[in-house]
Image 1: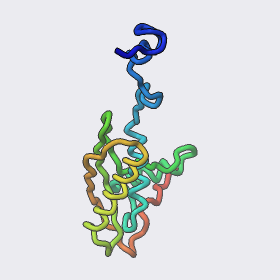
Image 2 (image 1 turned 180 degrees about the horizontal axis):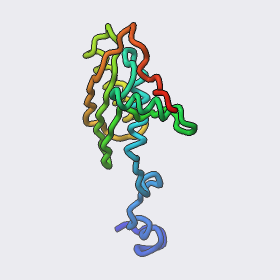
Image 3 (image 1 turned 45 degrees about the horizontal axis):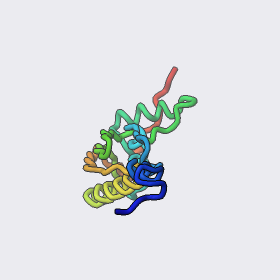
Length: 150
C-alpha cells in the first residue's frame, strides 16, 4: 500500500480525486451564423473566376445599400450558413466570369471555403452547396449600377 504525502486522506489525495479540466476547456464557445457567412463569402470571392456573389436582385439591392452611409459592402451576400455546435453547412450563390470552367471554379470555391471556415472556426464543414446564378459576359455593363433615386 502506498500512501500519498499527508496520509491516505491528505491534500494530495483530494487533488487526485478531482478530475482535472484544462483551462481552455472550461466554458463554451458559440459562433454565429453571420460569422461563418462572412468567412465563407470572403473565401469564395478570393477564387479566380468568381465575379460576384448572390442573385441579380441581391446584387442590385446590395449596390444600393453599399452607397448608403454606414451600409458598407456585405461580405455575406450570396451566402447562407446553418451552424450547429460542431458542424456547419453552407449554401453559396455565385456569378462566374465567362470562359471559366464552372466545375473547376465550384471545386476551388468549395476547397477555399472549407479550408477558411474550418481553420478559423474549428467547425467541421459538412457540405458547401453552390448555385451558379449567372455568367458575367465580357461586354456586359456592371449590374451594380444603382438605380436613380429622386
